[in-house]
Length: 319
Image 1: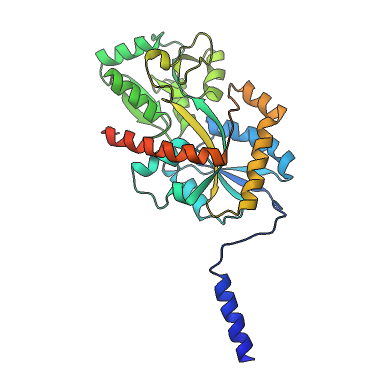
Image 2 (image 1 turned 120 degrees about the vertical axis):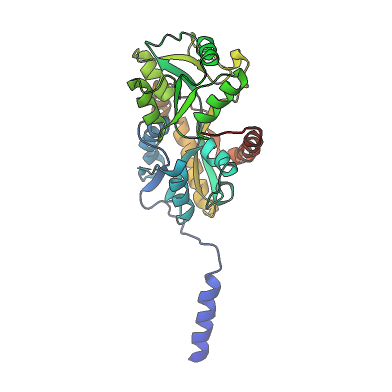
């Protein structure tokens, strides 16, 4: 009997060293999608769209869980610590995922601990002022910022974030100066602009377009090579690179997720992207449906991380 007990103990210990595997009847319960950002921003809005449609293709709902804090580290850390069973995902963006590791110590390495399920889309950042602002064009704004250093306040979603980096690069190239004011996410930063607590702000189409159409803000320019609206110039037209201010919205899973479950998720997101209701809702918000499969985005993810590392080394930034 002791021999059998010894054999069973050895078997249990050896199994403990093996990768976790799960049955193929996934998913059997709701999937949690963690957002490292506050409510009211473009991630919140787009997440509500794809989670609304996803149940058709997974037969289980996706539940959005807001977990802002520590510039995205709280949510990212929670995802890296979660069981790699496909029931916990992270909906983040390239700045938090690929840039942050180059500017501060993290208790995890997103490039090593997480893997891409899908890139939902990419979005161009738009430079905004209130509708009653005296600045009619981006040139007007930048010229004033040159002549009146630090007088204008610029609301952003946090240092090294998706609003901070493009704004900083624009001002550095133009030798213009504004006072940067950080807020806990794009939603709070936009509230500050609308309330008059800041002179300048920025947002992505799902947030910027409704406010512009309602006459609340004026769009001075948007990122990307193509105009978002016929009367809104692109940053490329001002001589900036076509990747300046472009945010990639990505869904990530713990790296040790099984291949079979990762495939189920990737297939479901691909089907959602082709769904008529999903595409109509995204279009209504002014968002594109430029989906990219996780396997392909992983290649771009590594390249963008290296580009961000070079950018950080070229800048000397203080908040």
